[in-house]
Image (cartoon, rainbow, N blue to C red; front, side):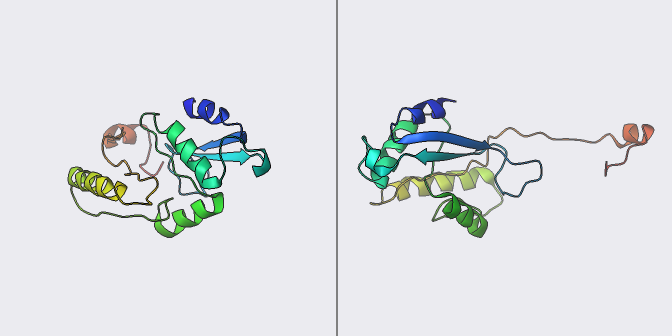
Length: 154
């Protein structure tokens, strides 16, 4: 993965571990198309390209920003899970828009994103993708299923 290679370029990072998708018995609300990265950092006394945690986040974000279709949020693993369980979002602050028309919701989310990005002190802003994602639609042929002795519950 391109992100793994970019992360390995930072001398402060000792190891990179990724968890992609969810387990067979999901105990985590993470969807299958999302990856969580855990960066094992060297002791701060060995850091050479960043002077603080915030400085490191900014440099990582700058490096990873150019990967198309990928968004990154930086947090601690426990903080991430707590936020996710409380709000359904990994972010510290989440804005949820509700409505019937996904296209209108996406347009409004994009407008909100452009306004929020202009606020001083705001870090990463991500709009969750809800449209344009591949989907599988399953239409059951009940007569054929009955011919084979199959029930919809199976």
